[in-house]
Length: 325
Ligand code: SF4
Image (cartoon, rainbow, N blue to C red; front, side, top):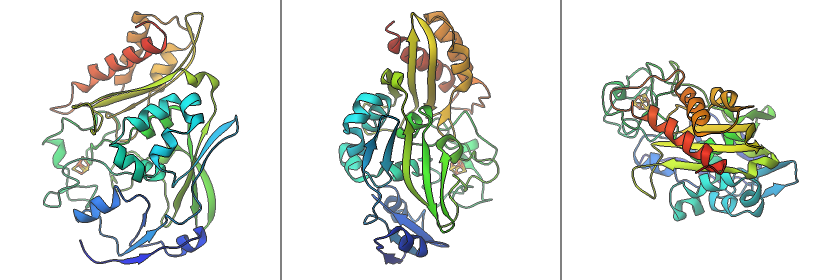
């Protein structure tokens, strides 16, 4: 690891004044320190933001607000998250390990980097790590890579579980920067790779993710997160689905769906949602709608199995939330 300056500001303006070119914000450190040890990320200055007043979880009946520094385990065990947003609680509890959830912040979780093995190996080229160097995953080991939102420059998946639930719930992020504060829908916050895969989100230079807000949907109490992975714990998703279902007299009044493990960003499944609204929920209608999840998919040599796996996982979670399995 190369040497770096270290700063530990106690106010947001002070933190912003210390950011900029070559700087990296440090929260729980479960991603940043890892990548610094691998020499994948080499900041000249580390700005430790753990003393900033960006903590707390609040629910006022209209929305849930989480300070970016709130630890994942504390969000998962908050009473309002447990009762009003079970999909978020389940996504958090399916993430990483208890030790990592005690350390990792919710803001850091939203900003975590891909687990693509080529990205983490500095002996290999990677457009995300070194723009223009190439993407060996296109022709190499790509079983775990994305089938949706990919480009010729990058096919890496976004690794977070919580983001999948938050995108399904129409969450927003509050960003603080030298020019002031702004709010961005989480679905718009993430960028598709295109030909600039190193630009992963809408954060401007020096901007800080300050908080996450989730609107309240009373019917989202009927929600779930299903994660398919290669082992039962401490593993990233091969395919995951976040779902919330408003079923009235057997008919889908409303539904929210997003998928993980398949997209270059948490993937909202609006075509599937549209195919379900107003229809009776049966095994046939669920499966027929779930087939739309593959719209636009570009499978690689080793990951075409994700198309039927996503369809079946979606059908399973819809029928489970509908009390039909
Ligand atoms: Fe790098 Fe993206 Fe290609 Fe992985 S998929 S090697 S992160 S450019």
